[in-house]
Length: 291
Image 1: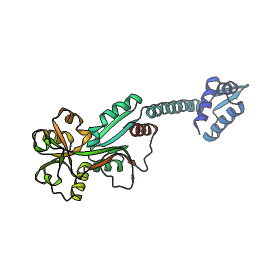
Image 2: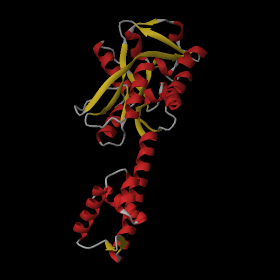
Image 3: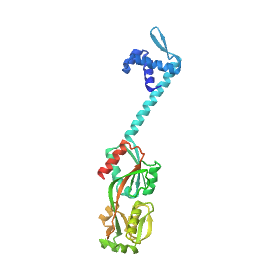
Image 4: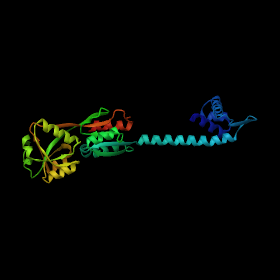
C-alpha cells in the first residue's frame, strides 16, 4: 500500500462520497474506486458498506482510518522535518591547526552571512588526525595544510601558504633580513608536533638543505609557539598567515632563509565516496572563490 492509497481513503471517509473525494483530489472517480478496491483486497475485508447508493464505514474501516491518518501525519511531519534539515544543514569541518587559526574564524563568519541557516561544527587537530576523522566519517570536510596519505580521500588546493622564520625582538635575527641556513644549527627551535603539516614540511626542507636543527619545545598550537618566541625562548618556522598581526605590531620579526622556501597549499579534503550536499558544495565554492 502507498501513501496515495491512504490519502484517497481518508478523503472518501471525510466526504462519504467517492465523486466528491475525486473532485477534491483532482483525480477521476474510477481512480478513487480503484484505490478503495486495492485497499479492501490488500486487507481482505470490506472497508465500506454500500447501502441505498450511500457508503458507510465498517468497524474495520474506522480502525484503518485511525491508522491512515496517523501514517499520513507522520509522513508529512517527516517531510517537513527533513526539508528543514536540508535547508539548514549541519556541516562538520575538521581543520588542521594552522588553517583553523589563520582563516577559519573569518571564513565561517563570512559563510554564515550567505547561508545563515547552516550550522557548522569545527574540530581542530593536526593533519593526520583530521585525515583519520574523514576516513571514519566523523567530519564531512577537512581543511588541512599537511599531506594526505590515504587514496580514499580527494583533495583540492584552495590557497597558497608560506612558512617563515620568526624570532623575538631581542633575538639577533630580528635585525637581519636574510639568514644563512647553517646559522640555524645553534638555535633552539619551538616546533609543531609530529603529524603536523607544518612540522612535516619544515623537516623535509631542512633535510634537503642538509641543515641540522634541534627542538627545544614541541607545541600543538600556533598561539603557544608565538608566545614562546615573543619571550625569546627560541625561534620557529610558522605560517605567515598566522603572524600577520604580530609582525605588524613588531612583537615578532621575520627573516628569509637563504636558499630555502617553505611553500605549500591549504587543501579541502573529503572521502571519495562522501555525498556532497548542496550546502557543502556552496561552502567549497565560497572557500575556493574568496580565499
